[in-house]
Image 1 (cartoon, rainbow, N blue to C red):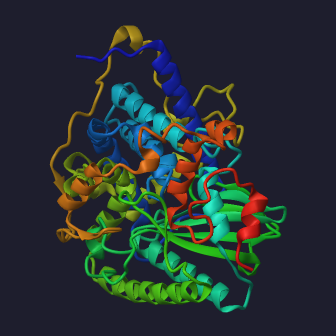
Image 2 (image 1 turned 45 degrees about the vertical axis):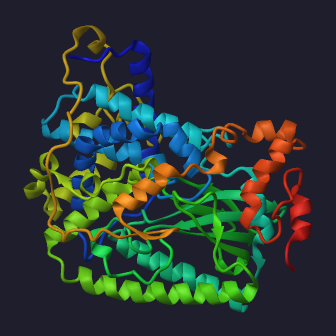
Image 3 (image 1 turned 30 degrees about the vertical axis):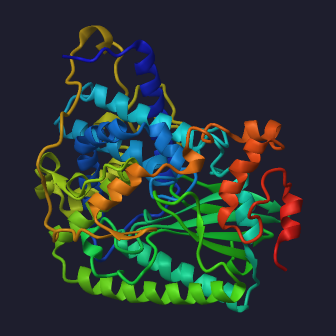
Length: 518
């Protein structure tokens, strides 16, 4: 029984396919080749795409039975989570759509098959993206000329006010730099030599010659990945956010992959302010870490950097003993589960949903040697030489002027013919070559079991995401900043702030700057 799809739905779905494809091509053609001496990267990427195609439609529908996509985004906008910049902004639609494209080119599905799933996944992404980006009014970084300005004024004021000044060579600057280096190195390894455990967004203007870039690091402690059990148990935070003020530097590009580019080139010695925070689905907003004094923050950066270095060594020792199949599963599950925090925020996360390879995807494992995977992945993205990528000869791509497309659009003839299989159906049995995950998850409320974590999330509604405040956006604040409601909302954001606690709304950027430490 087919679900009725309208002409308007198909028009919108095809438009999203085209926009996602053009941005994907641009991101790939302007980035370096991803290779590894440890992980079979191309092979695990292809396996993750197939797993996403077969599993995400069912899992996203499951998530929305607990909480709509746009309301999850309301919560994520107030904290930091892996499902923000890179996870849901780019990976959610594109990992799934690339799995579809691979199957079309193997002749396993027809271009029209899965149309109901594709329309739903694109619609889920659209609603989430519009809600998460509502403060800047865009649907993607591409539409925003590759900027990612997500946070409301109330949060940016707290970040601005509480940031400690620093300069190249002083103890705080040195400690912050070493922490970010050690944490990035661990994040790169824990995510199988990819960048999906760290993101950045901004820029936010602090002064005429100073911009703030927000750096996020995820999966730092006991988390969803089986290969991290016992590795970073001493790390007291699973997610950390570093706020950095950078002088004499303009970040002209911050994309959905968390990459950033600047003029003049970004240099660490231009960092002139830092702050440190943690957050997760159980926090109201970002919670300061070690921010009581400059000396405390310096010590905190040093201590956490050492914990990251120790965890990195343990993780290298563990992964060096894994077989190729285990490393393939690690990488595939990192990519496939990149949107897993959606389930955490909805309180419906289950380990077997996100840490298993669906049997329908696993049947292709035998194909995924390095030569095949490198060739197919390259052909699928750059230079677009697969049969499905070829378009009629009069067309020219946005980037490259070739008669090609990344994604195959749906024919409008399907509205009458109904010649398609609408969905891949529900989840099939999953498999993994990895050890079973130990049921421990580091949260802001301590180490919890999966069931405890879900239960606490379901019982918790952040005030800023409640019906009282969640729709009071920047436009409302502009015209009601002097109201009791605006003050109450700003005070909820300011509750942990060293400089702004209980000050409420109505401050200008110059007022905040005057309150900062010197």
